[in-house]
Length: 102
Image (cartoon, rainbow, N blue to C red; front, top):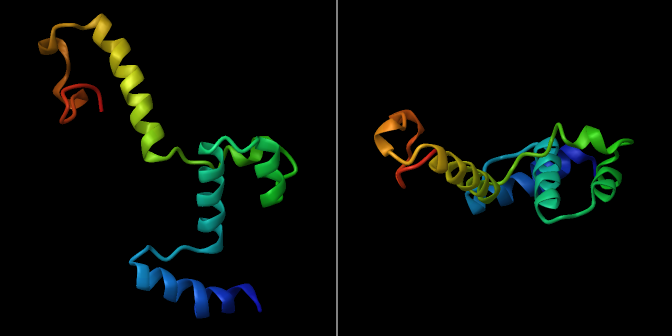
């Protein structure tokens, strides 16, 4: 079956039933690459699966998952806290609901 027909007849109806956003094949590729990266799949394996000749290309498409972003923020906020222990010195724009850098 052609990719467009498969998407229209099968994939998009399932997305609709599950309340998921409608993605294109490229969106699925990017999502899979991000998932594989966050699950420590070797870069060469990811590149081979999606057809990239070079592992550097996939870095364009990989997006950090929410949990990875949260860990990065926690690491950075911990370092900033050591330099700025007085919360009145912190910019309100940098504080989130937990009180530190967003």
